[in-house]
Length: 110
Image 1 (cartoon, rainbow, N blue to C red):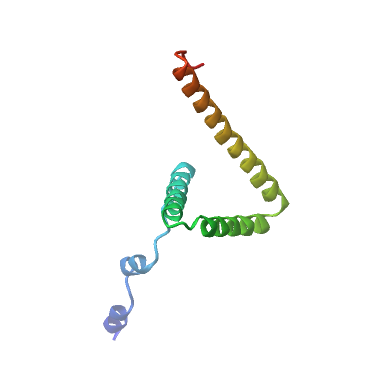
Image 2 (image 1 turned 45 degrees about the vertical axis):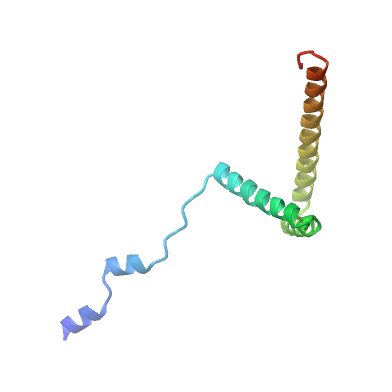
């Protein structure tokens, strides 16, 4: 009878195999790259299919849910990051335009 009871009990290896494994840890950099790639792909798709307003609506909805869930500090961080990102984009555009103008004028870009 003891043998039957023992056979009905799963052994430790079977229990370990049945337990869901914890997800692998991901680095901040890897997660950021994945986010940029996925959001970039969705934006490209929105542009191809003339769905940019839909993309903007969904992106801002999710941003609002994050800001609401995380509180006033998150709102301030989002606004600061948004301003910084816009400044970076504008600065790059200005630098590219100045470099093209310098090249067209036969000067070296500064």
